[in-house]
Structure formats: C-alpha cells, structure tokens
Amino acid sequence: MGAGARGGARPVRPTVGARRPVSRALLLLGALGALAYLIEGGLQRWSALQLETTLGASPALSGLAPKLLSGSLAAGRLLAQRFARRSGDNRLVALAGAGSAIGSGLVAAAPSAPIALLGVKVSGLGLPAAAPTRPRKAWRGSWPGASSRLHYSSIAARLPS
Image (cartoon, rainbow, N blue to C red; front, side):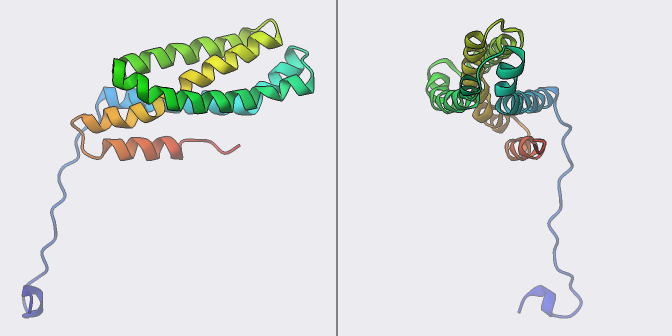
C-alpha cells in the first residue's frame, strides 16, 4: 500500500516553480511572428483584389496572386532550412524580414500588375523563413517552454477570415 492509503498521510503534490519574466527578445520574436502571419494573411486574402481594382488587371491575372503566394510560401519553407544550416538563424531571419518588407512594399506601391506579382513572389519567399526559426531560437534560449508557448500563441493570434 502507498503512503496515502494508510490513513493520515496526504498525497505529495509537485511544487510549481516560480515564473520567469518574459524577455524582450522573446516578446520581439512573438511580435515578428504575429506580423508575419498578418502580412501572409493579408496577401492571401487581398492581393487579387488589389491587382484587379487598383491596378486594373484582368480577373484571370489577378487570380494568379494567391496561387503565386502559396507556391512561394512552400518554396520559402523548403529553402529556409537549408539556408539556416549554412548561414545561421540570425542571418536567415534578417534576410527573410528584408525580403518580406521589400515584397510587401512592392505589392502596396506597384504601378502595374507584373510588379505587384513580383512583390507577392518576393514576400512569399521571405515570410515563411522565420516561422520555424522563431520557436527554435526560443527553444535554444533560457526560458523553458518558450518554444511551445510562442508557437501556440502565434497560431491562436491568427484572426479568422
């Protein structure tokens, strides 16, 4: 029989450790992830409309934008891991951030549909590179559980369409 079955002994509860404060670096990683998801969702939902209404593209050409984005996101996810092994996480995140910013800027300020489609492509290559890198960087840090918390909070932060 265990100690709890003898009559007066209470079961032993595991003690929960004190919470560690969230670092600024972790908050920045979370904010960057939320921004990446926001940009990705905006491009997925609104790029075709931008091409058709603002730039006067045909519906057939405008319909290419979400497809081009999806293909670029897939390619970006596949290429990011190879690049990270060669160049490191910090360089990957910097290059991906610059690519997504340039691509998003091209989409927003494009004078023509082909330039906007190029922006969708560039942004699509840059956006997914940070997605697997953020939790990995948090996991390597000193805050236990940061990786899973960061990942699930990023998913939960996505707004419904």
